[in-house]
Picture 1 (tube, rainbow, N blue to C red):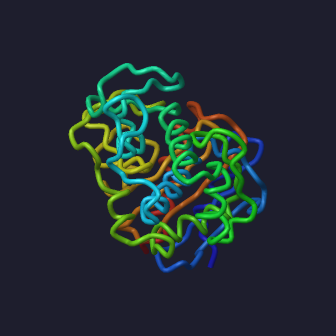
Picture 2: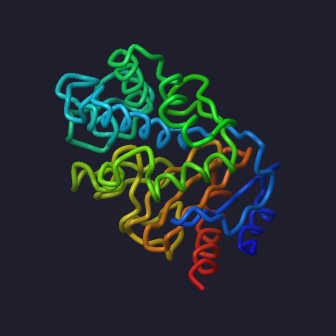
Length: 273
């Protein structure tokens, strides 16, 4: 059965789009569009990078609470955007743990930290630890671990299946990644303004009660995932037992703010029937 709701991407004002859904048991109830087309992920790169860091943590290469990034910051701070680093500059604008400052620079320092700890370039570590074991052969990281991933809907559905039923990580580690780190921290969700609190896990944004938001009005508060400025998103809704991926080749903007939530609500309504 193919989900009819996925066809809504045909109405999006984008040159090309692809989308798919995977359930917690690994079944794929629907896909739509060019599944094997490679799209730039922008910040949807971050969950992949975070997963590689969590593999390194389980392998004993790094500890979540070891120093990393600016003084007083840790691996955990960098994953949860509370290191105090600025958005796209390697300068500190707040004390660690003080505010949720969404930071590409933080993920770049995270990548550097892991590369030094393992003596393996971050892109290669990601390939060996996550992409290769999951069969994500069309996915690569060609630069910053914050934003320079390229992938397909088919590959990201494999990743979304893994996050829901972990094989590379202990389920307790993944549960921590979906859990709020540094509760009560306020900050700006890019594209959606200030939120208090602006909840985040380990590399994954957590929906909770945020409004406005890029997921749907019927998305559960436990929904977690990420969207990218290249017009991409991946969400996992544990209460619905499913995840969705959508990739486009038009930059995020008002069109996405308008189109994504009703798409998500339509998908959730269909899979919950």
